[in-house]
Amino acid sequence: AQKITQTQPGMFVQEKEAVTLDCTYDTSDQSYGLFWYKQPSSGEMIFLIYQGSYDEQNATEGRYSLNFQKARKSANLVISASQLGDSAMYFCAMRLIYNQGGKLIFGQGTELSVKP
Amino acid sequence: DTGVSQDPRHKITKRGQNVTFRCDPISEHNRLYWYRQTLGQGPEFLTYFQNEAQLEKSRLLSDRFSAERPKGSFSTLEIQRTEQGDSAMYLCASSFPRGSRGNNEQFFGPGTRLTVL
Image 1: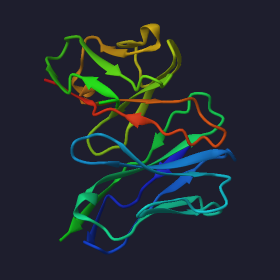
Image 2: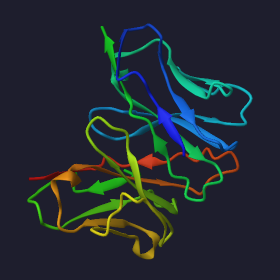
Image 3: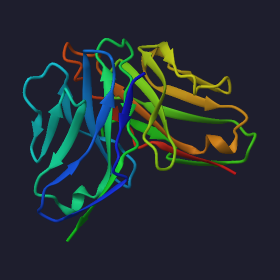
């Protein structure tokens, strides 16, 4: 069975500093995709970044980068130069590429608080 | 606004009542998903449509739950005889069909928060 584990219920970071949010996953499939979503208090899930299992380079999107270590089955999100607006819940999710439905399997989330 | 919309945003009901939620996906998207998110947890998959066909249902979707997507446009999720355990945020998402890299992101709506008293 596929599973996503986020072991940090809450994290604090000082404004302008970098922070790493941990994510480990479990699957026996070779073809999968890993996503990070941000959920502010308003409730809407906002897509941040994607990493495919066959991608050779770590994904980057602006201040977001994904530290993908396939052998360790980890896909940590790094946010550089944290801003107050980054305070939110962050979810790691996985999708099997050949699952016809494409459903996302989410972790429990990490609540990030950015201090001024 | 061309994003995913959901209605209502909040619903309070008494145990035993029926409720119906609506989701309007991004118009070009042919895939539509429903997820349920309880407090302090990540979203859990409920069901998925490709166009008007409901292709997958989670075991979480008991027989009290039914979802439709007539004409492959908007979708409705109905819960009959609500129970207090149904209290949650119900999220709708839509997407294009997956690309070869599987990177077709799902765009989420703001959710409907259900409270069953």
